[in-house]
Image 1 (spheres, rainbow, N blue to C red):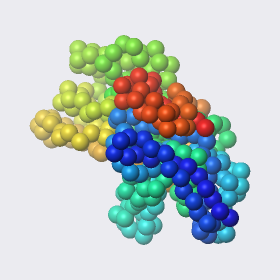
Image 2: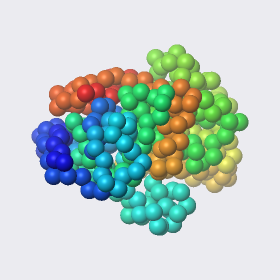
Image 3: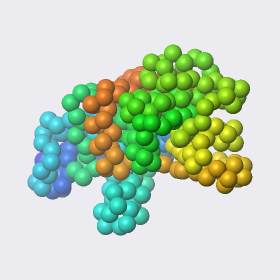
Image 4: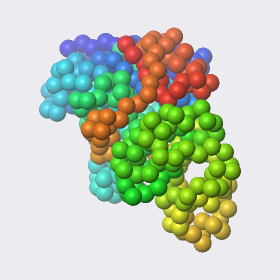
Length: 331
């Protein structure tokens, strides 16, 4: 069955449109008509890839239009989603231990399958990278969970954050507002850190127990078991080390290429760790969707049309920091 769909790509001059034609699907492939796609802002990867000749976007949601002969887990009409991770070997130490996001030969957005992404009219993916969107989540709500939400959930789940913990969240934006919801629904005491009062009411409504603004309030904060850094850039970690409990963990979820500068002594004597955490593997992506559906976690979104002009408008607004929380492209 011939398949044709459009893609929105990056290029030297910015966003471009293209088309893809396939004569037929391979046995394990699924053709998806895209309906929604999340947009990652300046703190994420969409902005980084804007001028690269690759399909844009990696938080896709759509409806299955056709399946290959060997596909058994999906049927025409299913609502499915995909994220940043495309393929893993299933054989290495990381895959065998359930940490396939760190597979030694992983294939990811921006490095593999560069002809397509999540922005466009459709996509063809191997069935192994697709996820069912559970009842209780709309496609628009599911899209921002496929990378942003799953990244947050990965850190929470893999570092054994508990309901009895005090957990700080730095940066109440695209990732941070989801972190507050996940943590509060798990029963943790959530302490939101911000540079402005403007998000206090929203942070509390999302589930924050405390809202801290400025250096003076920070110094008075009761000690934390964990601190999630979800801001656009990594802040001065030295100012936060003083509010960490002994053996506390600072989790870096931010895409930032700057070098870290931290005082070593308090880390050593208090056993404080700084832990990187990136994309989620399959296990925690499934859990992200199921947990969000079960507990009513809803990304706060602003929509843009799934067009070249819509992508450009959304990326501009994201870069300027004017989208409150998450942008979503809608067909």
